[in-house]
Image (tube, rainbow, N blue to C red; front, top):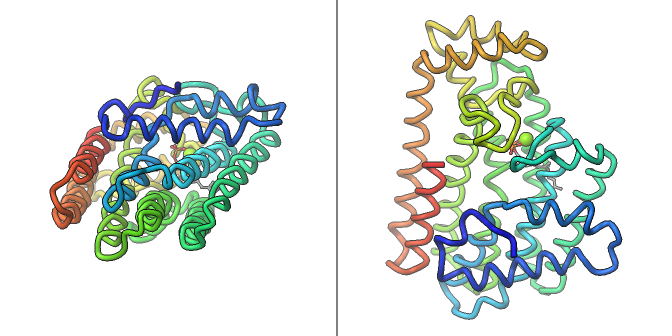
Length: 323
Ligand code: FPP
Ligand code: MG
């Protein structure tokens, strides 16, 4: 059994998550000679299983027996994993979840193909549900992820990227699948508005917090803690919210922009950006932004009836905010 970081805290979903885990693995094993070498390490690398959990919780808001939601929950995790495999190719990443990334070990060709493979296994599961609404929700989300990722790549090195543009990128590349995980779970459980809309708005704010924290950790924590290469965004010239706020700082902005533009093969410039970020007011502003989205998400949850599901969603929110 895969050890996930989030499942122990969510006892009511433990059994269901295990069933989903089996479904993920079974969907990728049969007849595929490369499974053990290329796919198993990815599936057993200890992801949080946040998206399947959101699918199960959303489903349970209206229904009790989760079996129908398993293929949908498995599919969103497979799509998430596929997107990370492709993302690591785009980012030229060396590490993922504390281990050498697939592209680092096997190269880009194999990684692109394994990403595609996982992606098709996800849609194989979704097809079997025969639920056109669910398939549509997930397909639209994947289109959004591609759009967001394209915008991010095209925005590289753009020191004038605005907060609004950044938000648009993360809403598309990160929040859309979290929202779809909720909406697809709700649709499988025949839960329609207003709760489905509340879940989607909650997931939007949760995703924003998640991505902003992820971007902050890239700048502030070591690889040992994140399981990813430190300062990867700066090295790859990806402009994230911590940098946008730093570039706007009246004292440090000018220097930060200069350092950023020459940071690619310059470890001293990278370290200096980290140091001036801590000294600037950007760090505090970033906390305020996270606090704002946290309040928005809490407000969404207040509209749900008090239940085990709502408590789990509050726990997830706190966990993401403090991770
Ligand atoms: C990680 O972001 C990546 C994403 C949130 C989305 C990636 C999406 C695609 C590659 C397009 C969709 C592709 C498929 C196969 C569905 P990050 O780079 O900010 O996070 P990281 O620090 O974990 O790398
Ligand atoms: Mg990345």
